[in-house]
Amino acid sequence: MTTKLPGLIVSLTIAFAASVLSYIHPSLEALAISILLGMLLSNILRDRDILASGIDISIKIFLPLGIALYGSQLTVKELHFTDALYVLLTFISVFTLVFLMSRGFGLKKNTSVLLATGMSVCGASAIAIVSSLIKAEKEETSISLIVVTVSGLVGLVFYPLIADFLNLTIKEFAFLSGTTLPMLGQVKVTAMTFGEECLSLALRYKLLRMSFLIFVVTVAVLLARTEKKRIYVPWFVVAFIGLAVVVNLLKNNTLPRVLEPFSRFFLSTALAAIGLSVDFDAITEKGFAPLFAVFFASIILVTLFYIIFTVV
Image (tube, rainbow, N blue to C red; front, side, top):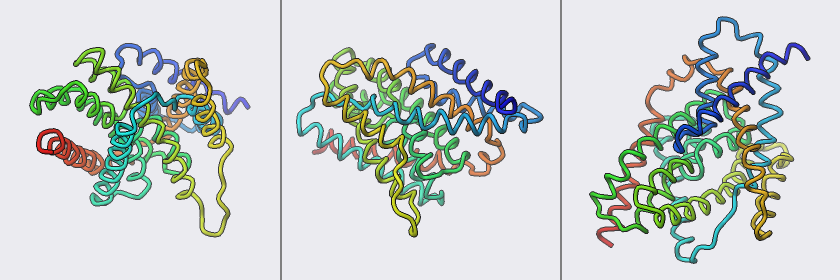
């Protein structure tokens, strides 16, 4: 047990530090900060072997717990059928575009799935959840999370400029930010530039979009199985879906608010452990292909929005 303590303590410490740092600005995601801090520390340390056992146990314990509790965050607020249909179509378009573009740039299937999941659903949380189900390599998880985070931060700068250029209405800008920016904090910051009404609409779109993670998880379970074995659904996926159903059936329940800090901290700890086990060289070997794939997919997506908002 003593051999596991160093890696476990370091992972928990990084997660705590990331949680504190995430309060500096709403666009900062604790999960993204955790994996970045883990990677930085990992590549500074001369001897990482002392952390190895604790890193493995951190991932095995905290990743499934974080995934299970994250189901409580998939609450869906009331939307008109037409709006819900548009959000669904956008979700499918983003996932498909990013996946195909990633494959076109020669990226592996797992990396392509993670990039598509992160961009289409809910950023770092979605990547952390799906990576465990498709048995992605730690480097694939790390590069996907970094690229999606950078993409969202770029969106914070350029989305208001795009809105001015296209002369978007409040509802149109809320839809653009709520359905395409990867992380919740980024949606909040960007939509707020147009005021409270825009923020409220964007969050509704974003929460509905987050609920589609259930479908992505289902696909991931199918992708993860081998031909000779029956489909195996991990306990934490069952708990994840169960909590998602419960919080949407019950009215005025406090479960999402109570469980959110625990889910975020558990996932942050797991991602810190993943970061601690990643070598920078393995990341840089992939080059800029993942970033270019997401970048070009985003250009196509914004162009489609331009056609819809100004031509149709």
